[in-house]
Image (cartoon, rainbow, N blue to C red; front, side, top):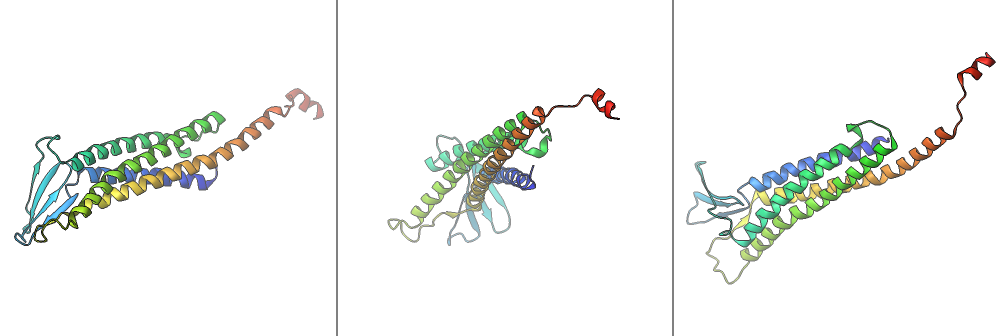
Length: 220
């Protein structure tokens, strides 16, 4: 197999693994939205999917988990559900992609190539789906935050929520998932051409007659 295919496969798996870690950080980080006021300059507030936190200038952080899922705002509840689905589909993509790369098993049978291509294709498709699922909640929360920030009906003295670090981790994870899916699917397309040439070589080897050892000794 060409070394370029190895590079595409390894980059796809590496991006997928990194994206899963970023998705996990996005899911657990309490800094989806941040808020600071001029009335309390020594404190800032953080809003996450699982808890809200109050951070003081002295480094003291107090967090309180949400009481119930049904009592959450609709955007936070939707983001929590979609981020959990994103992490699950990302792990499924890894389970398909890792056995499908060429370096995991160096067996050169044609059946092995077909099975690996199928596994990598599934891993790439799941990576693309994971990227879309991961971009939807962070983009939706960011969209609502922008609308509320520039809402003219709210007095300017009222503090507004702003973007937190978790949103940027979520965008990064979604982009990496999409890149991983593209790389895995691209390696499958190149592997299909190479498998076709492998079929031809196997057919030629089977059609070539073999000389028996007895006939070889007659010429000696």
